[in-house]
Structure formats: C-alpha cells, structure tokens
Amino acid sequence: MRKYLLFLVVIVAALLFTACPQKSKTDATTPNKGAVKVTFHVMSMCPYGVQVVDKIIPVLNKLGQDVDFNLEFIGKKNGEKFSSLHGEKEVMGNKIQLCAKAHAPASYLKMIGCMNKNYRKIPAGWEACAKEAAIKEADIKKCIDGKEGNDLLTASFANSTKAKASGSPTIFLDGKKYSGGRGENDFLRSICGAYKGEAPQACKDIPKPKSVDLVVLTDKRCKTCNHARLVGSLKGLFPGLKSRVVDYSTPEGKKLYEAGKAAKMLTLPLYLFSKNVKDEPDGYKRVQRFLIPAGDYSALRAGRTTFNPTAEICDNKVDDTNNGKIDCADDTCKNQLVCRKEIKAKLDVFVMSQCPYGTMALDAMKETLAAFGNEIDFTINFIANETSPGKFKALHGQPEVDENIRELCAIKHFPKKHMDYIWCRNKNIRSTDWKACATGAIKAAVLEKCFKGGEGVKLLSKNIKTANAMGIGASPTWMINNKFKASGVTPAQIQKNICDHNKELKGCKTKMIDKKAAPKGKCG
Image (cartoon, rainbow, N blue to C red; front, side, top):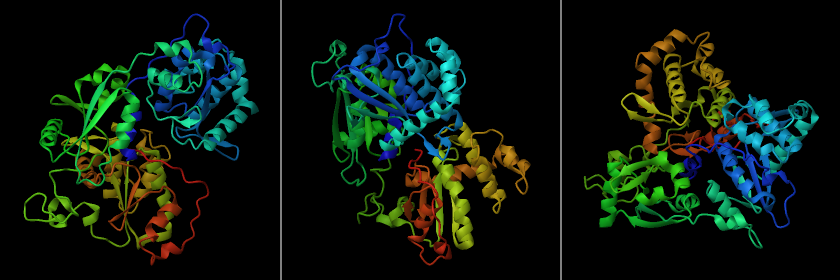
C-alpha cells in the first residue's frame, strides 16, 4: 500500500518564512525542563523536507524553549566522500545549514527559512540568507571549508542512519515516529498533546479541528482493498475526520460508484470527501490538487487503486460479468498475475526514466547482463499515464516523458546498443543534453526523427499499457518469468530474483557481491 500513500506527502505550496521584527522566543537555545523533544531528519533540497521545516518554524516561535528541537540530515559517507539523494549541491546545503546551526543556534532557522524559498538553487544564495539572519558569513564559510563542517555532517548522517531515517522527512515526536499532519496547527496540536505537565499558553489557543466527512467505497470481494492505513493518514491531515465504509454491493454503493464514474475513477477503493473538506484549510491545501469533482463529492486520486468491481474477478470461479467466461477465460484477466503464463528466463523491469531508484536498477543491469548474456530475455517497460491520445503524464514531469520516449526510440532502432545510451544518460539523467550520449553506434538524428516524428509517441503509448493494466506504479518493479513480481536495485538482488525461478541458468553461478548496502526506496 505504500504507493497509495506516497501522494500524501506532496504539499501544494509551503508558507514562506517571515521573521518577526522583535526578538524571537527561539533566541534562548536551552530547552526548559519538560520540553517536548522533536527531531526532523531531512534533506536540504527535498521539497517535502523543506515544507515541514517551513511549517515547524512558526510553531517553534510560539513554543520557544518548551520544545527541544533538533534538525538532522540524511545521507551517506563512504570513506572521505559524502553523498545525498539530490547530489553534491545538497551535500553542501546540508553542511551549510549544520554550520549555521552550530554557530548561530538562536537564528539558524531564520537562515534556513530564507534558503528554503529557493531550495532548488541550494547552495546558491546562502550568503544573502546568512546576512538576513544576522549570522556572520565568515564563521559559516570557515566551518564548511574545514574539518568542523565535515565532522558535523558525519555526525548528522550517522544520527539519521541510527534512527533508520531514509525518507525525507522522517519525524520523531517525544521519542516516537510521527505520522500525523504536517500543517502548522497539526504540529502545534501534536506537540501540545505530548506535554506531561501543564502545556504552554500557546497550546490553549489552537483552533478546534473542523469536521470533515469521508465515504470510502470498497468491495468485500477485493482481497487487496486495504483502506485503513490511508484513512489513518488522512486523519493526520484532517484531525476532525469522520469516515464510514460502504460496500459496492449495496444500493448506496452503486450510487456512489456512479459518482466515481463521473470523475472517471472506476477502481476501488474510492475515497469521496463531502463539501466540508474545504473547512479544514491546512489539510485541504495539501490534497486539493488530488481532488476531482464527483457529483456531490470530491473524489481523491489515491494512487493506483486497481479493483474494478464491474470486471471479472480472475480467481473466484464465478462468472462475474455474466458473459459466459469464467476467471482467466475472460479477456479482462489476461494481464493479471494469476492468469499470466510463465516464460522461463524472461526478465522485465518497470521504471520511470528519471527516478533515482529506477536508474540504479538499470545501471545494475550492466553487471547482470555481463553475467547472464543471452540467457535472459530482458525488456524495459516505462511507467506513465496517457491522459489523451499522444499526451502523457509522468511522476517527474514532461522531461521524464521525453526521456522515456527517447529511450524507447533507442531500444527500437539500436537493439544491441541501447543500454549504452541509457547508462550514459543515467550519469546525469536530468541533463537536457541527451545528444552527448548519442555517440558511436547511437545516431542522434535517428533518435530525433523518432522523437519528433510521432513514432516515439506510439512506442510509449504501447509500452506503458502493460504497467497500467497490471497496476504497477512503483519504480523499479521487476517481473520474473512473466509472472513473479520482485524488487531490488543491485546486481546481487537482481541475480537472486532471476535465479529464484531459473536455477539452471549459468549466470546464477557468477558470484555477485554488493559492495555497499542496497538503498531502499521506490518512486511512485
């Protein structure tokens, strides 16, 4: 269900930080006795980390010394080198913010709030933000250029690793992992609820949460329609949430499904908000872009829900559609795992071309293909949606759509060399200079003609149908032997996936050892 939940962390727009002209309560840096401990593990260029930091700053200004706040950063150290998900610029951004924290504990959050306004350009502009926060630029520069900055970053990365914080943000409140809402009032309400003794005065002024009604339409026949976790997450966004569950088989369920059809949402579970969802502005702002008008309701696009209550259920031995075809004999079941025929040594990967985990998986195929060679039939499938004929939507935007098309053009026209193009692009996948990788046997003119002439669009339209039919939305997802799903981003993991179902292959005898811990995570 993780892929159903990932959308919840997307905030439409973070509130810009503005400092009060008078002295802030956070100028006193020693926490009071009984202060609630709050720890944020973030990445300085991660939009979700930036957004929660922006939301906690006004809360800290209100509660001051009654909060023991700590900011840590997520990344890795290999030898003397540091790495972070968003690259070297983020490593420097992390270090700059840690140095500000060390040298100006009373005002470093003002500097970070300033940097957050243009977080995509980090570390550029930090000097102006230091000046705005009245922090000595020389102190920060000496720190980041010297041993102190490296030591601070080493310790912070270690603290995040120890806390098992791999996603930004990972939040701990009073020693426990926090999964509540991420608006200013959400943080204020949660922190205030954690005080053991009398809460600060600011806690008495928190607005009471507004009532928000949610109807969940599901189907008792669906084995994977687990709505409880998502409703729990929505409760974090809407503290006054009142939810109820309706089954599709009931008259009300049929009526609600018609509302879903009006929003072109034909799969379950279906999450329908009443009009009072707008009464809780913080939560509403965070889900607004995912809401679609559906009759008297607003339907929530909740990831890749896949159960179609009007279609044949492929493993219940019942003719659900009354067309005389039962289970796998029905055409709608042909792409379902239970009905797919096993094809030995078939290896499919489903990726997003600009997903960092997807690029890791494709890079790992260099060693994998060297071990297995022609023993395996390897196919790359992309994850995207066709919103209208020839128009696509991908998680990482139009640049990812364009790269998906170019890579498919390379696969089509250069079947023996296309991986060279992909591996080259993966070194800097967000660069617009794709022609730099169209060298040797890969001809840029051929790729451009395919891309602009309409052929590439047709290739993508056809290619993404498999993922969409199977409800695959996480990059990377592996399909072994046309039938078995798996995950992994390293050569050793991929080899194990293959050999679990194809022990007779010679490539299974090749010893593959991952030189470093396999990163965990997926896009989607």
